[in-house]
Image (cartoon, rainbow, N blue to C red; front, side, top):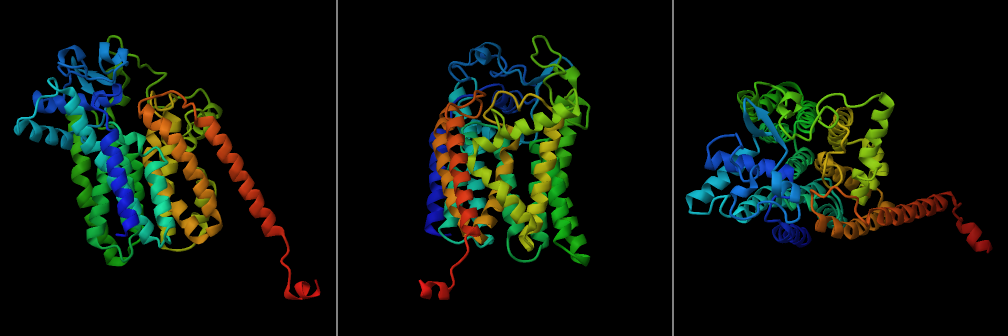
Length: 463
């Protein structure tokens, strides 16, 4: 590992450490933390007695200062099932979090109700900060595997670490930074040189299984994409051995998710997609703002909403300006022959299906959060496509630097706001406007240079 990459990973570690917040930022992480607290302190998935449901039970305020709604009423990201409240978040990620909290309690650490600040900070470091750092490490390995030349491997890695939505989402507990780490791990393992061994197939199966359980919108398409990739990259008897290893590693994790969900909600599908579980007194959710079924009055409105997810006031592409490079990088990396193209195809399938599912089944732009939280994991495969482009086409490296600088400027405000701030950043439109203007200028200049006829040696001699 080169010194430059180590320095970036260390800087990412420091950023995650100092930016972690010692409180729940809102309903989303409050709901997740409520499950962890309840599993250890009350040995149940039911969150009725949690400080994140009833904040007045805590010795200190468990929610962000100034969030009066959460401080007064607790999280609203909950389901009422058989007279008890449960988190509407997927259950499996709560298990390792509960294990860490249980170890903390065994060594004499204070309970969540006694020190909600320590409780939130510890879990944020372990399950938001560490996944963020692991994602940075995996993207660094990916740059090395695809042969991205120095120093551009480190330029791209720094852009990923500090100029995208990855760093703001490392500030508080959430599913999306976890899935970003899984997605980065998948990309790293998939582009690694050498044949698809059973060990690598099993590792990809474990990652696919974890991804499936983390987010039931983006996770299952990821599992399907990775399964297809393993199938594509192996042949003959090795294919069946690899697929067996993949399924054997993925199945226990997936089965655990469905077993817990069925035990709690009596359903195989997502419990939060059942509208009757959201009909509790004072619930802010109804058929107009829940995710899970067709959510639009017409196909045309669905199409406009799907574009809004990428380019609107909360547009995902716009909040990480270097992702604008995908307009060039994705077509190029899909067209260019080679082993890496298989990975790009599989990850593009994941991104398109995830986009389509959320575009069809929601209309709330992922709720009160920074940009579109559902798409944060898609940053990992985006780095692969951009890396291939700047490896092969040095002319686009200037474009990348411009967009990374824009992302660094924008991220100052995004880091201050945190992942659960749903307002449009003040810097968004000025930064995007200037960036797009500069980029168009670079593209036009490059086009004109390409059309300019080259002078021959004879012409030069005559002159």
